Length: 533
Ligand code: ADP
Ligand code: ZN
Image (cartoon, rainbow, N blue to C red; front, side):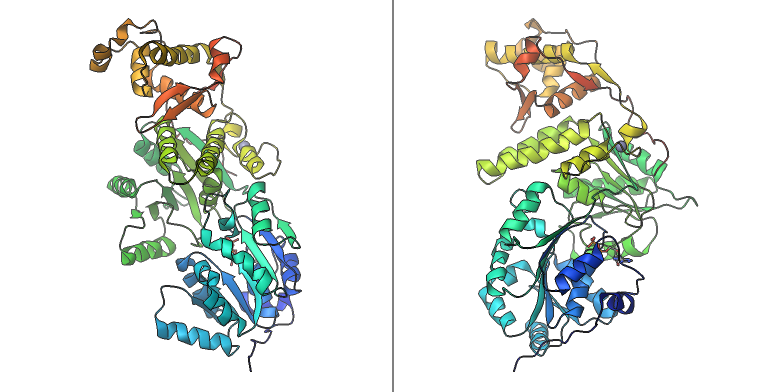
């Protein structure tokens, strides 16, 4: 006869005190737990650090049977199960990293009704074999963590998640709870539809992280800027170095930047998926246990790492989406104390990301979605309004200016950039019309500034009508103009060399029907600004 793990506690409050040692529930935890423990479905949108895990862990202890948790990250599964077992919860996982004897023991325990919680990788739960196996025991609930992975709109789509819609048909009486920390309204809708959660109750927390100060600077010499940033922010009140994460796009740059910081006396370590598993494990442990470790990582780092006192998250490359940016910066200041999210981005980032989108596999609709993600990220970077307001607005949450971001603390001036925009655009248009040529920003700026480079001479570009008409702006200022015009959708970049073309919208600027406002950029970047939080 099949057996079910008996309910371990009568009340949620009792489980909270006894197992987890906490005094009270946070935010909507109590309501979510009541909904799921009572057999209802739930969709939970809660920022990182909000306390999502308890929302399915406690109902699993209150209901008869085993709570089955779908989680995409093996490392995270491992850590969560370890922590639960330390708290006396009977938890285990099934994933591809296991040997057969270990797996057989987990399966036996489940069937014997000896497990409160069972973590399963999504690709496993999609398979018929695993479903048949689970049917032989009693499932208390299904928790689908990182539920945004089911959404094609999102930045982290995983096809394995699509198969989870079947759970509703196979287990119509078992409650299901879907949780995510990153959700636009579009993603929220997709989660609800694709996981057949039409009858669920929805719990949407505020996504504001008021203790995080958001700052975005133009990228000049990024390593120097980063060093200056860490030197100005990287110490606590007692003068001790603080922990932080630096995100870079490529494995090679994480290593170079970590080495550069280390040369300058910062306790920095690289982290990326190409490093040996043992090295990664040690780096992660040092980050968790030592004070003042700065990890320079690709996005492989951070998911599921529960370190409350990360004081800063820095991005030296542009994130691909606002969701990604929000998720990564969300790893700062989980303890509620002041923390900083600093991002440096430049023209090259836009060119590089455009190229990656153009070259990405997948259909046109997919590339278009990636393009929209990039545009939203650029809009956040170039806004002259409150960063937080922009960020929360992206998640469909209206707010007022926060007083704790760079644009609130130091409102950016703007200037009339119509004339420089016209000079640049007409250079692009002339080259294309008269000579069927396209160039990237570097060469166009050389033309405008009247630099006699070998290339200018080779092409005879000193004969152009726009030759040397832009000497009033510096190289750096011109690059800022190009970047902002790209972000405003007046220019487009293509291919490996980032050749520039004008968009349809540019016609109005060229004909003088539309003016262009540009953000005044600091001559130097990475200044420390105003009081935090
Ligand atoms: P999320 O999954 O939403 O990022 P977690 O579930 O990992 O968040 O919780 C974040 C941190 O908050 C963890 O250290 C957790 O133990 C703690 N926590 C969660 N709920 C409570 C609570 N009610 N009281 C105190 N601490 C809590
Ligand atoms: Zn603000």
